[in-house]
Amino acid sequence: MAAAPCLTILATDFVANYKGVPYHDSRYHDGAQKIPGRVECAYYDLGGEGVAYHDTTEKNEGSGVLNPADGSYLNEFRMHEAVDTSYTKFHDAIDNNPYNKVMPEENQLYVGWTQPGEWFNITVQVAEAGDYSVDLLYTSNRGGTISMDVNGEPATEPLAITSTFDVAEPIAWRQWHHRSVMKDLARVKLGVGKNVLTVHILTLGNMNLAYFQFKKV
Image: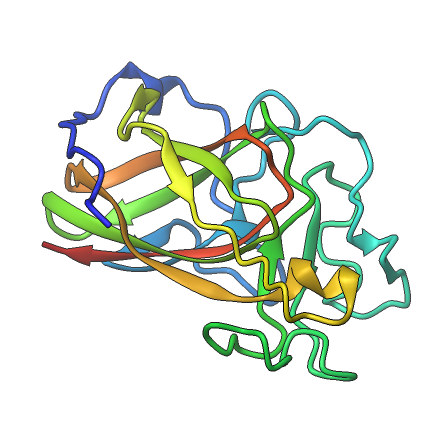
């Protein structure tokens, strides 16, 4: 697949005026996620609706709902925020199923239940300015498109997400659990230091987005 055009994005007043802050909690306290490296979607910024994210429903459909509130870190992860989050489960062949294109890590957090128009911000710290290729660990039962902004400006064209639907799958609900990686999904140019990434869900939705892997080109 051909990579999306690489667009130059420079630091702007967006970063200086941005009210969101990097995610942190008692277990994850590293602050801004590091590039090059893995950028976890579930560690989207703190700041709430309209600042750190926009979600079409007020309830987190994963934490506290699909995953009952039981006092555990994973089941209650960000349960009072609107972005829908869950994690990979290796019991009953849910996420370690034979229809994966790649096998995920157990307990891998992800953003799911995505709908067109939703977005979330992730503050990152870039070690070296330059061009980066972006891979994505995800599932998608029907495809769709996403895009990425950097510092409030479009950094990619709409990015087509390949469906992971498999006609051989005998369990209907497990179509949402076929993990795959899209290699070189996008190319972006990043400045050194603090940057704010915005991930937009453009069409179709129902994608589970685990993480973006940024590699220096």
